[in-house]
Structures are given as C-alpha cells and as structure tokens.
Image (cartoon, rainbow, N blue to C red; front, side, top):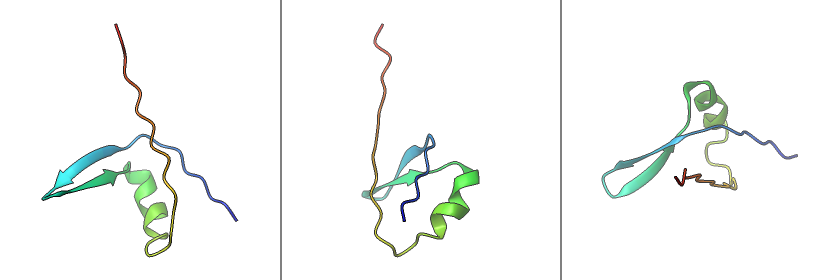
Length: 49
C-alpha cells in the first residue's frame, strides 16, 4: 500500500538538526507513521525575476 500526502511545509533548524514542519492538518496523519520507513520527495521552487 502506498499513501501519498502533498502539502507545503517549512524547514526549521533546532540545534544542529533540520526538521520538516508540516501544516497542522497533516501533523496527526504524519505522526501515525512514526517509526516507519518513509520516502520524502522535496521540491523547492524559486521565483526568478
């Protein structure tokens, strides 16, 4: 089974680690995946004038 969540997130730094901070509506869904292996596709778009 494959579950896909697509959302915009922030990356925050705490200490020497970076964390992906999802929107509140996805935090509970992602918390259910704790201790499971997941794959992350990270896209970063920049506006070039």
